[in-house]
Image (cartoon, rainbow, N blue to C red):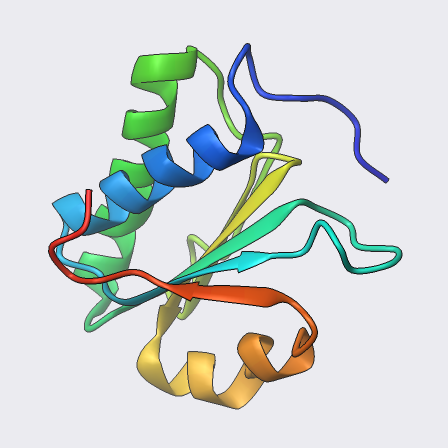
Length: 127
């Protein structure tokens, strides 16, 4: 169940900040999944990307949090996966961020699991 909106910005604007943070650290295969039309969806959007190493995955997650905090002055509601560095999840309630290692992203297949969602593939030079 959704609990709160991020400070004074829409979930679409929050997605844009997340994507910008990902692009700052050269994340690849960035996808925005719009879940608003999915019945019983737990969030408005998933933003998913891939990093190529433990260091890059950490840097992407840090960059996303920095970008969001700089504009909204808010921290994530929840964070998971920092220790394992294979799938870092950053939960902003309305937008859930997934930073994957390539093998983990393929294994979990979120894009297929939420196949009814509208999917936006972000160009590398977008933003």
